[in-house]
Length: 408
Ligand SMILES: [Zn+2]
Image (cartoon, rainbow, N blue to C red; front, side, top):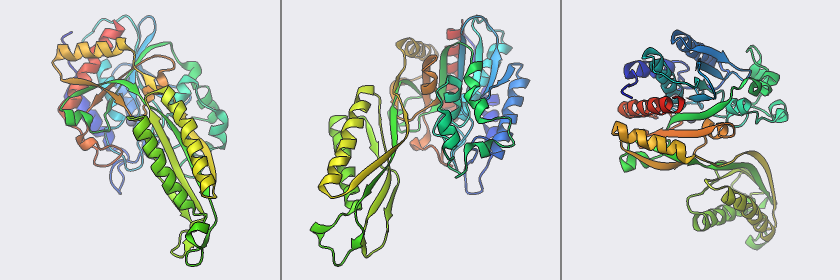
């Protein structure tokens, strides 16, 4: 169908939203339910209302704009919250491109039989309670105890963050009761990696999204004097971690190439020149596109940690922080995207997503689909996050055609 997005309007929307939550340290800091986020929410609601779409909001603060139809809903969206000192494109382009598509469908009176809806999900970035608070609330996948007992990354309970808003833990837990039947959920997002740019392609058609496993881990040994304790008598917790880091990486690289394992944060105690480390605490995560591989890694890596601990006289301990299942994108959705890319004359390639996204959670209640556009140098979650605007124009035009086809 010969219809394009109004790109000037979409670009202006993205620039306007990026003015909210500017951080003096650089970039944008707009975690969900912060002052900046509340301002951004009001701005978004205003944009939805002025488009003539029916504005909705559920008990988790997820925001919707709906154009009625019959049957199951075709939904598209993402999130407008950011990490601390984040960029202006991660999430925002998914919400605002979807909004622009619905505006164009309305303006041009494009016929569609099914309802169309834009969605903006709360706290995708996990500043408050693990990743995907809003989309997990929307799909009914939250654990109330974790919301009540856990701490946000700001060191206070979620209930305290919610004070002064219209939301409570109870309203978040009940958000899924208001969910319509959804046929498909489509998200457009920056790639957050270097592949599209390297391959010189404008559009990435995502075929699967990795599942992940996050754990806080520790090796406990014995702190002792660095000058008087012979090497063979030490219970050095740091050496345990070093051994484990190399062996676990080697296992993933040789047995499960394409899957990932990362130790991103380490604290060594007591932490001094003259003391053999008695304790090391570290974050440990692994990801894979394959459910079977994730299961194998869960067994193998933690028994490897136990082995390392026992040969070195250490104790290994760990606590689960979060996990998600890998999701594969149905061929039907990928085929529609490929087809429309060809019609539009855009270069595209199929690729997996190593990062998690709201669409992965939505996959439990709808057919998922995901479009990537390149980001400069693969950088995201940073003030340096950048795109080529013409790539976004193409991505938004592709989204428009995909939505029209799905909702017809
Ligand atoms: Zn995002």
